[in-house]
Length: 121
Image 1 (cartoon, rainbow, N blue to C red):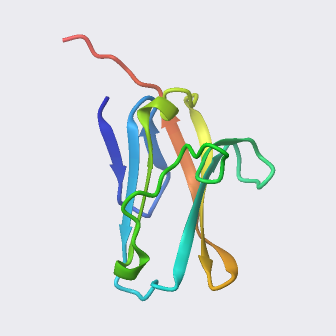
Image 2: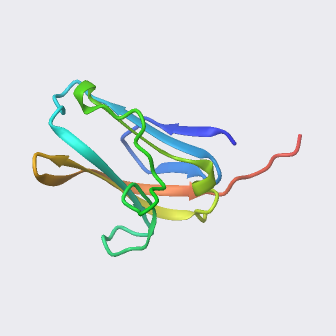
């Protein structure tokens, strides 16, 4: 499957079911004291909503390969084997980091999962 990458911070994010999903953010601001990125995709905007993918599961379904806060880089990925089982629907994605001893939400926004469509040529 094709990979879809999000670099835009505005609007509703949309991804295709069954694709590899990746996000990549960089900043020139000092974030070297940040650590332990925690990314969660839930069925709704509520901490009690069902989790569909997360770095915090016993077997994480979201990875943070390439994240390096010393260089101002935050990356996370969800593989196609995971996204193929996420139903086409609207979800909520939240990113938290540890700053010192405090957990802080640095991103919270809607995510629209679209069905994979096959086009006959």
